[in-house]
Length: 293
View 1: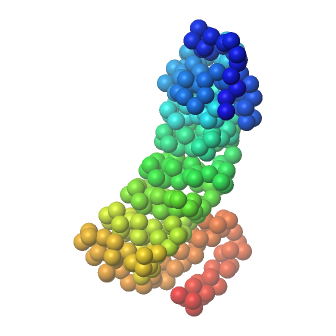
View 2 (view 1 turned 90 degrees about the horizontal axis):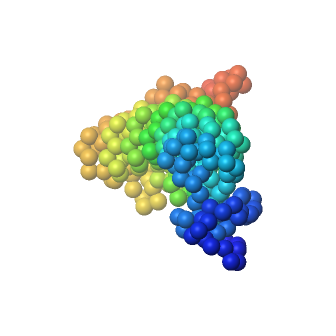
View 3 (view 1 turned 180 degrees about the vertical axis):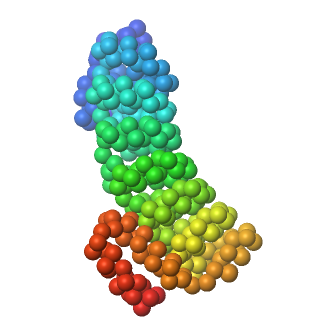
């Protein structure tokens, strides 16, 4: 609940510097739970207005000022995809790891905007690891929106590739649901587990359901198993009316040895990076896979 100051004329001095620490952030205590608890700093950042933003900072506005739901000016600049505004805020000490009440970080917001230069900038100042309790992650968001360059940047910074968020699944699953073909390809090449989706629903189930023929083809090329059933007991073939997808699923045979080799290498890469020890273990991994599958 906001702290209300007595005898304050809100309308005559709406951005009076009466702020206090609230939940670890400097917050506007005059207006809570409305659009009006934002400041001119927030508005300038969201609109990408660099000169007003610079002027406000020179006038003493706190760069870390947050609304009561935890939104900072850096969040606003990031969701708007405004590189120069975000750079200015970061240079003035903005917290690149700030988390809003709904779980968004500036990195997450930048992935929503799809600006790879901005994502790269924020990665310099922030941790790529998103808080575990949140309902999504920067990688999931970039994959869902088809922002391939952002996906590849996150992967290059060792973003955990196979994290399953309960409500939306893995990043690969999100990309398949959105028919983001290039993201699907990048994730598979980087080591995403082709069978790991949302619960028993695999990426192949998702791609078949939404009619993503290109995604289905990619998944099958990387060893997806069309015989797996989801929580409803259905195979991917039973979830599509698309004839081209049905043909792909009906004509794809068991994984070849080369596909199994690629699967093992990708899995090793996706987990901890491929090193000499893992290379020596690949024959053993292949033996175990053939034995138990």
